[in-house]
Image (cartoon, rainbow, N blue to C red; front, side):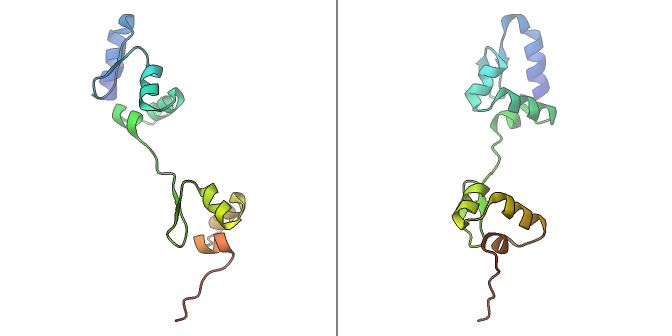
Length: 114
């Protein structure tokens, strides 16, 4: 179901107070639908304003993992920085100045002189 269809459906059934998601599930309100899908109503509104489809609004999960220079993955950039003992602001500043991830995390770059 397209977002426009969902909005039109909401308008047509306003008195019955029914909202349908992209799978056809019925909810009393948009916040109820958002709760079911694990997103906040503000997230719903932001994605709606960015012209996401209804399915994208409800199911999109951004990848917030960070990967260091050794290929280790962390749940967040902050977790990665904590592992290396670097403040996240320092890390971001270094990256913005063009430093490699390795140098930003360790203060030095490896030299593979083998």
